[in-house]
Length: 317
Image (cartoon, rainbow, N blue to C red):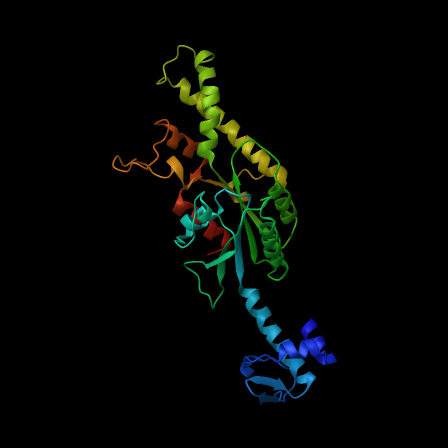
């Protein structure tokens, strides 16, 4: 609209910018007039005979762009640095070109779009969007990129879903939490939450309380006794509640059930496989033989295919 107004007023800067050397597609123009706008070719440029014709062309192209944007949907992965955003998208959707890891090359430094592997770019495209970690005090431009991208929600009403990735751990307020709270207030942006690193969170806490149980409430009790798994189960549910209360304090309301938009996923570390290959020296075995199964049962941790199915269902695919 601003471009069309500038052309109608004959603004020289707008006119100069609009008369580019790239030919305009006349068949894509939506105009109210029955007359085709007259376009003259001057050298390599296409110049309209009057500002009114140029303005109608601009409005027509904007209308075409709005129609395309109305069909487009975005799944934007956001969160603090090193929580596993890129890993979630890479493993769930098979984006092999997404680089992960803690090295410099594995750090996301720019916004990356990837078409959903089962979607049609021309019908109703769905793009997964990887973003830099929010809250990096040394790379402030990364924070601005996510803010600008989420602002696209005003251009795609109902077409933006924020996939907020949270690293399980002791609740510490982060800059990313403040952004999530603001985004959750937008009516046109849906929010899904994936909690990662549950395995590391449990391992750290269990190594604290396990010895205390051994010298206290479970003193003299064999590790094979049913009282050990019963005590661990109670402890896991306490940790789960701690995580979900922390998430709820940011997004507001209860987020316990999958139907409300929160799931757990561990797509790296010792939770990724059911069996450890003895020939693979880099494979991570679980610290305790029961750990993987008990954590999966308690937190309902999703594997790659299960996470992909959950995300597709939320998108209506």
